[in-house]
Image (tube, rainbow, N blue to C red):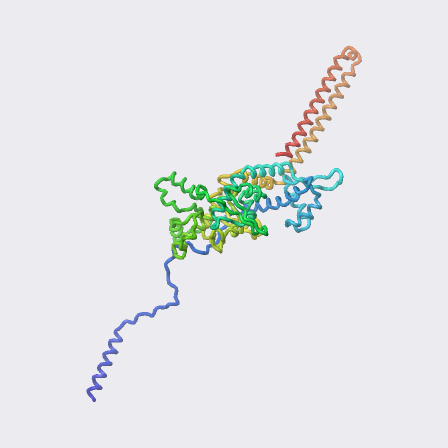
Length: 468
């Protein structure tokens, strides 16, 4: 028994010595944060960076939108003029709710609206200036001239739909951006039955525009033409542009190292064309989801390329979301690609979001302008002209009229003095009577001709100042 206890004591003694010689490792702290590898994919949520060039563009359009509302009210009248008091009442329907807001707004744009006193009623009336009327005619002619191009746009828009048809109401809401006339249901859809078919319904909102036949020659995106041009310029060095987009980040946008890698990888991801039918593909894999995401970018890019001003509101795009397989959260989706698109909240108190195609603009103007765009920008130019310039024009007219009166009075005074000097000498009066009569008649004719010419020039100058 004593031997067993002795051996047990020696065993435990050796175990304790071995345990004390072991270096204890520190217990890992799972609550502490450690540096993790950064993902090389485009983040789902990004902070929007403002680009003041596009925001200033929308501030100008905010003014022109109000001007167009008042223009429509004036043009609906048979005489194309309205009493200012009646215009104040009618303007409440189009957003001018404050008192005297309409009158103050009209006075800011004297090159668009003209206020005059009615010759019979002796009240103030408002009508459009000659410059504004010429701008309306220019836009009307440009819109009528590009109807064939609008037909092509509508065909391409229907080809991008998965069912080859769209609601008539959705197209009607976006007609101004697509360059379609107001009566496009009759002047475009029903006029070209070889391209379109109108599916009638009991209600107007349930009408559909259906494509009769696909045209493979139209299934070419605008970005593909850009890639072809770049490939021809650079040759083999442009091999990487096969699936890439033109990316131009706004000023102040911070691009980190991992974001550059993510964009580089995303540019080389293949995708299906917006005109391809993807109903037969299995879209459950990660690779298919990446392709569909890039296809959505290409679809919005193509939709913006078909518009007149290369911009459209986000709410208009949302109408085509189901038909074109676009994501639900469009705003967050577009913010992931701020180098391709720009979302502006200016122009309508933040209620509407306008999406611009960045590559189509340079220094606030379209790179490739069209006639309809130039006609609409003409109205913006009239709006931007300072009202002080109109005041200076009136002052110059008044100064010219006073100067003309002084010159006429001076000429008449000189004529009287000359006649007095002629009749002062009694000895030479009879001898030079005939000559003096001829001289006075010549002077009178010259004075009358000069006065008439200056009056004509004065009238012409006034008319020129009222016309562009």
